Length: 308
Image (cartoon, rainbow, N blue to C red; front, side, top):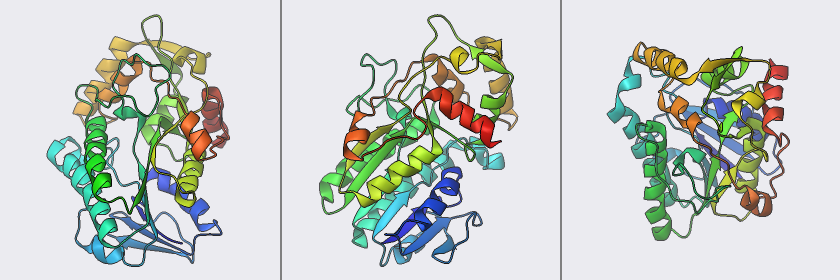
């Protein structure tokens, strides 16, 4: 199997590519990213390419499957352009559409798309949330807006291209040694954000378990959406019992100030902590045979500390 990976220098790709190269069914990997390679292997070729580029059509020739990771997540690597909403939307939406269109033109058999649990409408009446739950972004959450816009577009694309098998993975917050720097810093900080009682519960998922789901989606005859999260849910206080409480208004002010002056991430990520988001992962366990190695939120957090 020849696999093309977009966003091949992304945080998650650092965890995915070694596992992909070690898979017995994978003969060749083609990485596509605007940044230099983060992985080297005899079966791996890295191409500097924008996912919006017409060059992508040529790269798709002979490819059996695509893993679409390319997406602007926390804007930290965009520098002065991190506040350019039109640019970010174009990368995320037009780039994603180009990936799927060129895959269809090249007769690629399968595409595994990394979506997100951020697509779900909150607050949720259903708990845990199944894949059929309505999609609606939190106000001002650009990341969720673009994930939803691409999924909405994919609904029509899949109806028109039934010959392509599309699997949409919707992981909760991804933690691990290659997680977003902001998330790693938050996990290791000596404080936790204190929320109003009853404090909402949250889930996370370890990057190794997301990689396992990607590999399963590549090699099994499955399609549709799949939630990914550690089985249990916990409050921030339960996850960091020895940490000091930081009042939410103060945390909000700090994040907003940092965002304004080019540090940290967009404030909507923090606002999302105020809403309980617990996923039903039974479909992934049933259809993908997914058995997460890190199956508790506390276990995922502990793993980050142990991995340094």
